[in-house]
Image 1 (tube, rainbow, N blue to C red):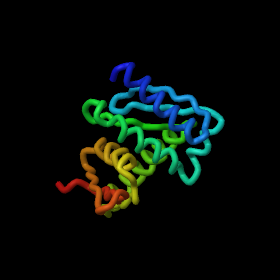
Image 2: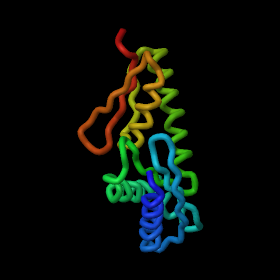
Image 3: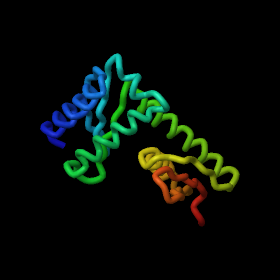
Image 4: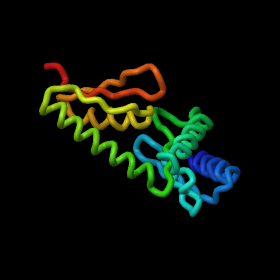
Length: 152
């Protein structure tokens, strides 16, 4: 990704936050498959209310506004005060627990309902294990992920 896009995304997020009455600083970091927008500042806790619904909405807005400018399967991930990073790690740990439970009991395990971003994290964790598989079920935005043993 180029520096021009990074600076435009940071400016866009900063302007959205200012419009909402929040004083936050945005920095952009590129990782393997995502572009992280880190927000910091005193009013950041406003985005984290109600289990981070404001943060989810802001991430959706950013991805909608700049989706066509990203290459491949890259996505924008908006994090504020480390909330998403911590939540992602908890989700990976829960997926690992469910993988182990499905493996030892032989009974498929359900996680959800999860949004597309959370489902992707679970599917990527399951993909680390050759003997396990996962699938999303449901017909709405929030779906359930079923984790089970791969048929032999």
